[in-house]
Length: 316
Image (cartoon, rainbow, N blue to C red; front, top):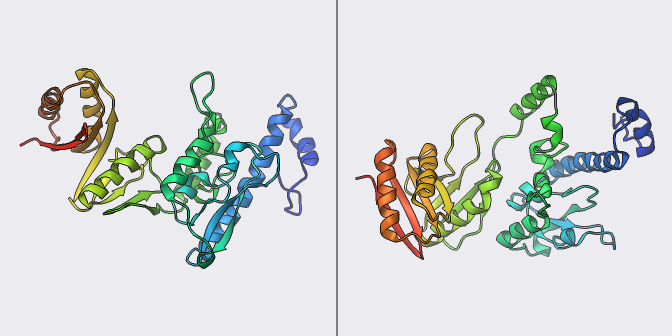
């Protein structure tokens, strides 16, 4: 209903007239924000597809509208310049919120210097974080790229929860037709870390931190893997060691909480990397890890990162 009979975008005034008969009690302020977001997302899809054609010659640069209405959180992203395949664009390609007017532009690689990938990821996360009274972050839903996911609204938008069976069937159909999984490179001093476009967002930064640490320290080549529908998948595949590994980060101060964490990890992979900041002693950690290995029949190893030291514990 955004389009007229000639396939042009309707002005909002006409869009309101056409849609209000469907639900005349719907908040028009929300409707305007969603109208603007839908139009912006569709335009972002077109831009993204164009950018892929010249990604070898151009960087992408984040740009705000440049006026006094630009929110401070988005102004902090202005000027970020990165390759088109950088992990930043997988989650912070505009729009990055309701009524966001940010966009991107191409700039020749020989005429620009790329920004720090790790710093921009932290900036993007900060720009889309606003904890409400319920302790939740409603801005987190905007961490997606419409061009990659081929979705007008964020995948975690409440619209999808309210969808009827037919809409859900259509959504699944679109998801099956989505572009294949892609990998972007995370900067490291040594080794190599590749990040899947389908990485679990909730654990993504923790996984990047651990993988980067291991690559820099041991010169490992690591792939951070994506989520597969209806399948249990580990967080990573260590190409150097030829093993899958599940990453876990904890501040557990009880043996029971540590045991639950390990049990969850071994469900995903027989090899767990456990980074822990805890008041538990090293001996207590070792005993609990070996006890859980005995109980989890498929468990093979735990790489424990604790108090600045690494320890490898194996079943044998």
